Image 1: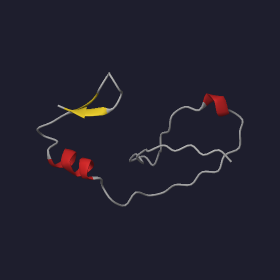
Image 2: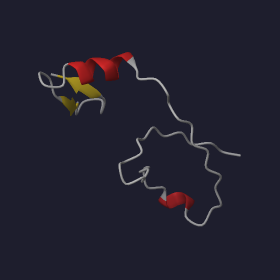
Image 3: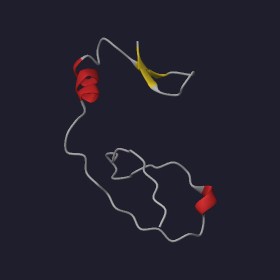
Image 4: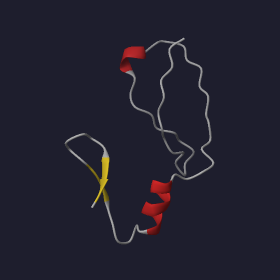
Length: 67
């Protein structure tokens, strides 16, 4: 069995968004949801300083960067 891993957040409407998986169209899947009960240190930092910093995509390696 092949496994794919995505991180997502449950929206206020109850919807979970994942990347489109066109190449798996028609395949049967089993979905397991693991609730992340703790915030990462990065999430805590961003929440604390959210009025002073912005998070943007870094075009070079497509990772989040703080400016």
